[in-house]
Image 1 (cartoon, rainbow, N blue to C red):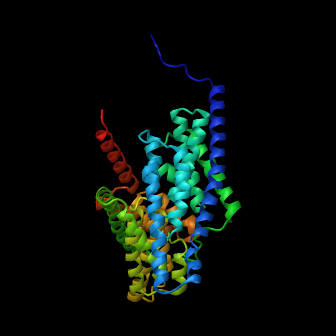
Image 2 (cartoon, rainbow, N blue to C red):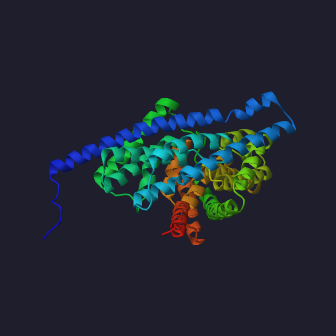
Amino acid sequence: MDTTPPAASPIARRREARRHIALCAVVGVIAGAIGSVFHLAIDAALRWPAYLRQLMDGPLLVVCAALITMVVTVAVTYVVRHYVPEASGSGIQEVEGAMAGSRQVRWARVLPVKFLGGIAAIGSGLVLGREGPTIHIAASVAAMCSDFARAGRTERAGLLAAGAAAGLACAFNAPVAAILFVIEETRREFPYTYRTYMGVIIASLLATIATEWIGGVAPDMSLPATAPALRTLPLFALLGCVLGGVGVLLNSAVLRALAFAGTAQTRAPYVYPAVVGCVIGALMVLYPQSVTGGESLVRTLLAQQTALLLLLLLATARFCTTVASYSSGVPGGIFAPMLSLAACVGLAFGAAVNIVGPDWGVTPVVFAIAAMGGLFTASVRAPLVGVVLTLELTGTYPLAVPLLTTCLVANLVASFLGGKPIYDQLLARTLALAAADDTKKPG
């Protein structure tokens, strides 16, 4: 007996498509509104060092700042570990796992913990980005709408993808990069149909409109730059080689730090996040350029014309604080810290180029912009997203050719060195830990 369900009629398919598009539109609007409030709250929270300086100075200021960030880090880590472990870190790997059916988005828990915990953790000064939590929050909104609409598996995966795109579009005011992120990064999980594809576009568009209505229309990191001569493209290829190695090293360091943090938690609970918070809090007043997400760092460095050695020191410091902050277990992404780290590397590379060839006519800012896309590509292994995201973030569309050169070479070098996409590795680690926990349960 044939048990195959009858094919839906054209009218039924059109009705389903309209419903899916409507749900994606709702997800885009809600995600854009919540994400914008999330970002504004983080910006407000990050003003606490200035208020603290008005009350005290000297060693007491350093001690109080260290204690504030330490307490916040430990408190948020405790809440995450006891109530919703999947809210730690970026959350992008959780969304990819949910689209593939291997993870579950418990939106009723994720939404409040990711929202409030993200504000507290990122606002305390930890070197984390707002984009990961925003994507996870938006995907949780999509999961909520999916549950209310009783969506099927394919429609649910499409809604999660639309939520992810809406979250990234909101985080960086970059709608095209958000759409490409779904296509390139989640290509194995995304159920590609006409309606799911249109749903991603609509959610990204409406989230961007909501973000621009609340926060303005300028690129988040608008920078002045002119296109360099074509004869300088080998320099951008060389920069791509450097960034390919840095990206593989960064991914490896993040995974090793997460493993160390897990071991430390079993032996001395909450000591590791306490140490990380204490150090980051002290740096908030001693060396503020080495902490926070770093969205405004590039413009500051360009205005100061920082020397080569100081740029290398800052890049090293931000590498270490990024790895430590992400492995602490609080909600927070790695995109923004990665972009600011890349800018430091690119500016240092540009300063070195000016020392070797002062007459070549390439300003360091051009290398900084190209490095943003290059390091993102080397770590995430999504070169098209790296190019478009950087162009939308900085508004430097004349730099498309050198940026594409840097991203292409960085991707090839990272692949040659055996590097794997960071979110694939994070998802594999999450699934392995979940499987290990299941084997420990009785019965």
